Length: 154
Image (cartoon, rainbow, N blue to C red; front, side, top):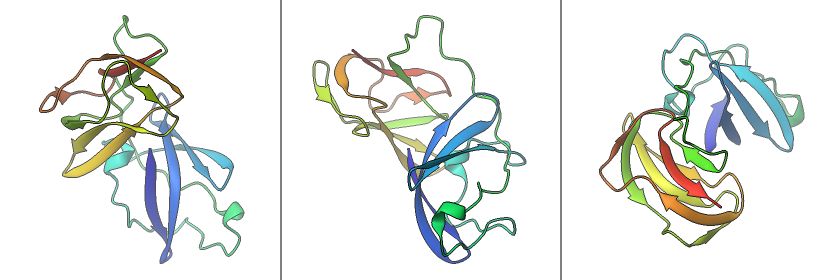
């Protein structure tokens, strides 16, 4: 998912991927950083986009920006055992506002699949890879938990 952050008054767009154990992979201008979130007790996408931290660097050369200061997030609950590696799961608990695709539809990496509302923020959940939508597990109005299956790609 893409997130806008402001570090020392400067806005950046970063790509965030949730890993296990409260860890996240943050990609910025072609470089990846692994960060651990501690202290909030919530998933990273609910962190205010305008957070500025003392350990963040306002770098004139963005490649030298360190990973964001640690913030805590609980380990995500694992996806159901029936979920395949092609199943896109909920990165956080929330409510499905919109399903943006239909079964049989071809999707591209980064294309929005569903819009998930969490903590009054709308989060578009993107396709992690190119594929065909094989199965849609949710409908508008559904409440999901972290790790619940949303879409299966083929």
